[in-house]
Length: 52
Image 1 (cartoon, rainbow, N blue to C red):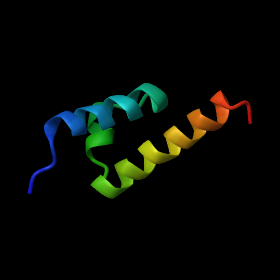
Image 2 (cartoon, rainbow, N blue to C red):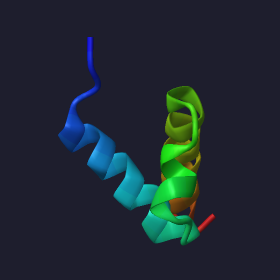
Image 3 (cartoon, rainbow, N blue to C red):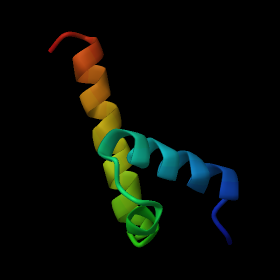
Image 4 (cartoon, rainbow, N blue to C red):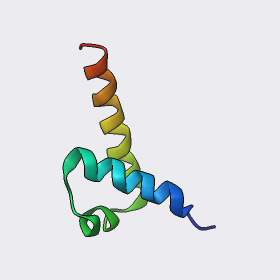
């Protein structure tokens, strides 16, 4: 099974936007690690938007 290209682009854009990492650095991450960063960024954004 292959990972959907659209989903990969979303993850890369999300991490790049928030961490300012290069495309190569983000693509070098293992899939699980990239998803972990996506989740952590989302949690940080949620806390900020809730004023915590």
